[in-house]
Amino acid sequence: MTLLLQLFINGLVQGMPLACLAVGFGLVYRSLRIFHLAMGAQFILTGYILYALMNWFNMGLMSAIPLTIILAVAFGAAIEKGVYLPFFNKKSSAGVTMIASLGVMIIVENVIALIFGNNVKSISTDLEPIYLWHGLKITRIQLIQMLVCGACFVGLGTLVQKNKWFKVIWAMGDQPKLVPVMGLPLTKIRLAIMCLSAFMVAVPSVLIGYDVGLEPHTGMNYLLTASVAVFFGGLDKYWAWGFGAICVAIMQSIVVWQFSGEWISLVTFATLVFVLLFKPNGIFGVRKRMEEE
Image (cartoon, rainbow, N blue to C red; front, side, top):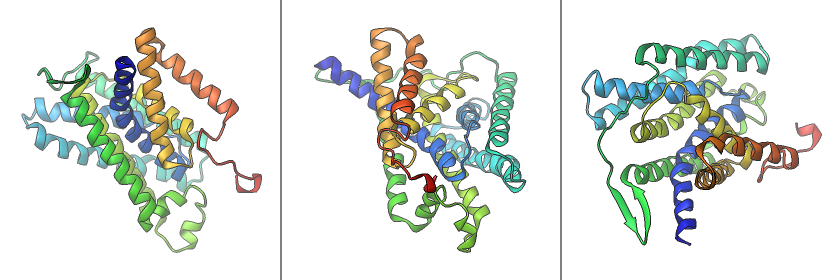
């Protein structure tokens, strides 16, 4: 029983940051209909910004984190202004935009590797204190990850349900042509979506980077896992993204316990294929009529 509880806690620890990443991917994909591959670049760049501020400019952690998040949001806005919006104005296909997004990720990853090298960089070398409770273990940084990312996920979910502007962002994926018809600023709404997505990616990036360190080519793994969580839960349900993230994280914990970390990607994507084959709209997805699609 203790082992099952520990695996569940491990799933929550990994699942809450993953839920934020799922929101970062899901908002862009659902609202803008862009398969946001550049999210992988945002994730890894954010961690390296924090590393540079603390190690090159000798900033303290508490002052470096807010500046890192601001710069990460600015980078998300730059992706929209410099890449996504020009392709949208040209009425480019989703495939062309996705390739451009992939190009952003590849460029950023290689520039980071060129500047920082391919070795793992540690933001913190201090040993984290471990909290024990009835045989269950959790480190301080893991507890912070779970609480902070959980608060961000729940907070945004509440705004999506109750704030009219967030409702517009959410509804934009269903009827994008109605936004300009209703006199709403489409360009500003797109920019807001990208900034919000960048914020939701930056928070777990900072915490995960501080916990396990940084490596230039890990962005794709987090991106793909976040996308699996979104499609697993269901694209049209915000809270389902969090459910999908926790399920994927718990499954990954069980795989590591029973086999090894090398099996994580295989089992994760095998589950995604299974869901897409037998539940293509996700576990909590809503089946739409053909005229609504």
